[in-house]
Image (spheres, rainbow, N blue to C red):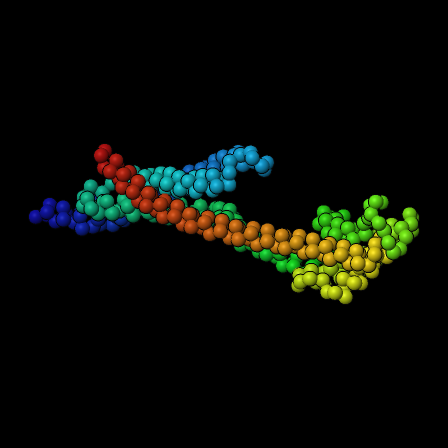
Length: 315
C-alpha cells in the first residue's frame, strides 16, 4: 500500500520529487544563447553577402527587386535556423521526467522551446536595439528628410541665389540668374543699347546687387505660380540694360528662365516625394516581414523542442 502511494505521487507531482519544477531554466537559457549566437552569425553573414552583390554602378550587381526578395528569404532562414537550434537544444537538454504522462511531456517540451525563443528574441533585441531601430525607423527618417527638403525648396531659393557660395547647390541655383545676362551670339541682331566690350552695358556683367534683386523677384513667386506682370517687366528692363536685348526679348528671356527654374523645383519636389513614399513602403514591408519571421521562429522553436525531447527520451 505504501508502494502504491509512492507511485501515485510521482505523476501528480510532475516529476521525480514533489518539489521539482516543470520548467528547466538551465535548458531554456542554453537554447536561447545558442539561438541568439546563431542569429548574430547569420546576420553578419547576410550583411556581407548583401554588400558583395550590391554595386553603385548602373548595370552592375543584382537588381533592387532581387535584393529585396533575397533579404526577405534570408530573414526567414535566419529566424528558422536560429529558433530551430535554440528549441532543439532546450528540448534535448531538459531534465527527463520518466513518471510524467506523454502528453504532458510533449506540452512541456513545446513550452521550453517557446520560452527559449522568447528569451533569445529579447536578448537579441537588447543587444541589437540600435540596428533594429534603424531598420524600423529608416522609412520615417528618410521620409521626414525628403519631405523637409521638398518643403524647404518650396519656400524658395533666395538664400542660395542671393548669396552665392561655393557649394554645389548654390552654383546650380546661380545658373538661372546667369542665363538672364548671357550676351546674344554675334550673328543675332541686337537692337536697343549698344554692346560695348568692357562696359557694364551689354557685357552681361551685371553687378551682384542686380543679380541678388532678380533672385529675390524669382523667389517671391517661385512656389506660388507664374511671375507677376510687373515683375516680368522690371526684370526685363534689368536684363535689357545689361545685355543690349530689346525689352520684349528680355521679358521673353525672363519668362522662359523663370519657367525653367520652376520645372527644376517641381521635379525636385516630385523626386523627394517619391523617395519619401518608397522609404515608407520599404519600412512597412520590413516591419511586416520581421513580424512574420518572428512568428515562424516561435513555431519552429516549439516544434524542434519536441524533436529534441523525443531524441532525449530514446536514451
